[in-house]
Amino acid sequence: MTQFIQYQELTWPEIASLPRNCPIILPIGTGFNWHKLAEALSFPSQMAILPAFPYGWRGSRVPLADSILNRYIANLLHSIRDDGFTRVFALTTSGMPLNLSAEQIVQPTLQPPQPAYNAEDFEKVVLIPIGHTEQHGYHLPLSTDTEIIHAIAEGVVNHIPEKAISLPVMPYGVSTHRNAFAGTLNSGGRAFEDFYLAVIDLLVQKGFTRFYLMSGHGGNCSFLVNVVKYAGERYPHIFCATSYLYLNTPEGIRILDAYRQSAVGGMGHACELETSLMLYLKADLVHMERVVDEIDFISTPSYYMDWIEGGSLIANPPWTDDTRTGAYGAGSLATVEKGRIWLDAAIREKIAHVDEIAEQYRRRLERKVYL
Image (cartoon, rainbow, N blue to C red; front, side, top):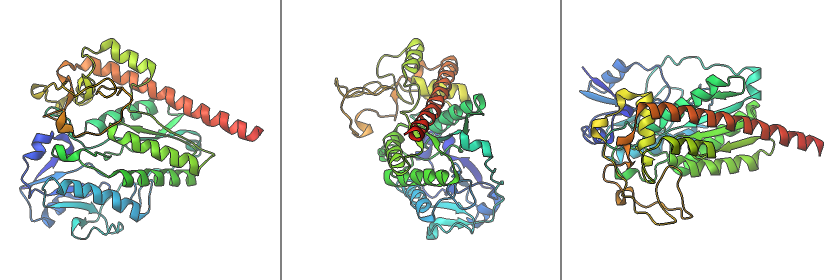
């Protein structure tokens, strides 16, 4: 009997310990028959299932060109093979010609029907939440960034459904440092930019005009800035925005400072903040007994690590210069109550951003009409 492992729920040392002939499966969509898949692979003892790729494929709510999707998926598969895994597959239906040859398994699927857009949706801000599947030290799962930004986007829509709608959270982004620790995936920066610009292209064609690209993973942010710039140049009549992660406004920073116990350097990655949020959201996936605080980042006045990254220098040195476990910060100081407070503050922050995006669009449209 095959044991099905949820890849994103593991920590990176657990990924590192998997046999390198363990099949790793990336489902493109949902509704697949896992028993049939195990049979097709001769019933391996273990099989690791990655988070489903939520859209971009034919039949999804946001279907993109095959070439755009193919590059994104191919990069993800390559990053797993780069960790030494030899049986890495995309699981697709016959209507997805991804040209992945031996890396593609085709199976019939019962995909749930994609909901139609309502007329009132076109007057709302479209949230595009993007997380990642990436190592988070010894104690947090690879799904950390995805779980957090999904909860924030869901909280926004639940509070203001008349103002915002959301795409499904994307669990794959960009990690330029992925070789340092096992398990981290990487879509590639250029493929990432092309994919999200194509998403904006399609949604603009459908009639949407207001967009908020929300990232739970720092490695996505500089690339999302480029997407926003390209989209603004291409479509002068829309308003498309992004921001750096969450809790980065003056009020967000105030709430962070009011409850944090760590000094500068205690909030960066798998840190006091992210660990608190995950204790609140998914405590069963957090292993506090494994926490290792890492605050010995090589810091200078213009380059250091904290949640609101400071200094005038921008760089990308190897992570192994500053961490041996994959963490930056003081995860041991995390609590459930801090996670509740900080999540609520992050949702309020994003609600305010939605209101600003809507106001920017309205006032700019009025000025265009007046002129």
